Length: 168
Image (cartoon, rainbow, N blue to C red; front, top):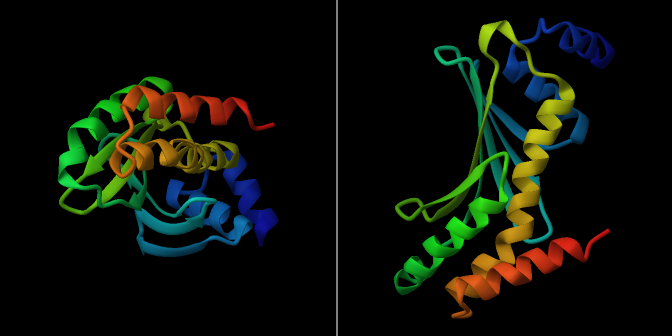
């Protein structure tokens, strides 16, 4: 069956969320098909468990991804957190972080536009989810340092950048 789904994926005959489900199955990620146009997964990282939701919007032909983790920083750290997010988002070319204080979530968002009948491939879905997880893993220590360690956003950002360069 996997071979058959991969063949359909290559021809673009699969609905984008069916394709995401195929990717989730291949990685053995825990997932829940929320509806025809939405899937929610849990992906384990080094620092956190990430909730990843992908939803297809037929109206604007976009596959949207929200990759988030719980975070409840002290209110007095929010200005430094927002300053850090601006610095972080300058380094993120494929998506961006936002903090949703009412839900206590740090969120990485990305939209894959598939206008004009374009279709996503397995490699694109893998890359999309990987970028969200990698961004969370890369910048999580900086968020922690700013919110709970009282570090300046520029200092915390230097640590995140140095850590990224230090891995092979």
